[in-house]
Length: 354
Image (cartoon, rainbow, N blue to C red; front, top):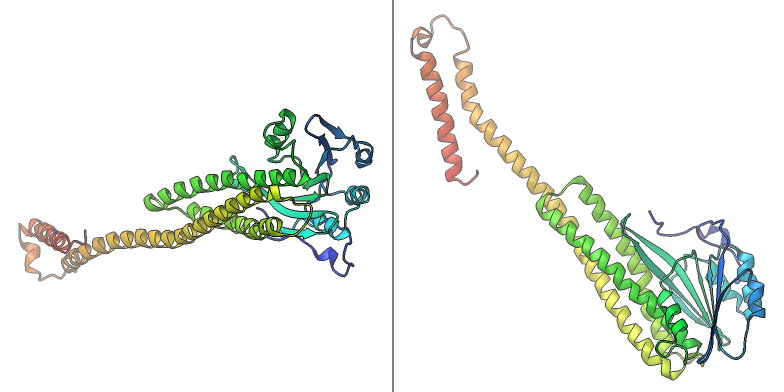
């Protein structure tokens, strides 16, 4: 289960800009992918070390450096020296518990947001921090582990589809943000399907596992809300800000992402209300099922109370009980007990208790 918060106590007391990795400990080597392009040319390769990046700057073009794995603090520190990045931006990159935010450092802008993916086999939501550092001619994207939602962006760059090869670094940053936000809809679709299945189960046959599933869904929606809600403010700052790194021709596209973000937030809030209502439905269903069981048991007990009384009377074995010497006494006792039971059943039926 994903943690709601990550341990940040080891940063306590350190000065601002101290580079400390907050997040899951990993041992694999980070992957560094380098892409440089303009309208006429395109170059893509994997780098062995971050130092190769400074030697890989070709003629005037846009550079996209994607780093999978930020657990090596030395790598992030060297990256800051190569691109002259602000220490506070690097500090936010290493803190994977950071909420989505936007910072303008004049020479570059830093956007922190969450990338969501859904594991169909485990029915589990995965949340990963993605940091975008945008400069005049470069974009650096840093994420916690390998695997992202940027494959379509890379394919558009390779095949020069659309306007992405004609625009600047701000448009590339927009494209990456748009890919992340669009993937939110894929995750919401999966969660919506899970909610529909759970609703059918609640109405037909709620089980103890159902309550655990509801709790799991509620927890996932908390993560979603925590990841998406601040993103609306981030996109608004990008679109309405005064940073010279975001050109006017890119702002209409950012407005479109803003609309998508609002749509995602509305859907998340709707799902939260539905799941919160499911808890009440589950408790009501369990209570109704218990009441039905108790009603059946009560009816059975009520029928057997007079029958037990009759059997008890004739089981006292007094010597002078006239019915004991009667030849038809046994049959009469059975007939009386059956008649009483039938009368009670008829009475319950007329009252619509059964």
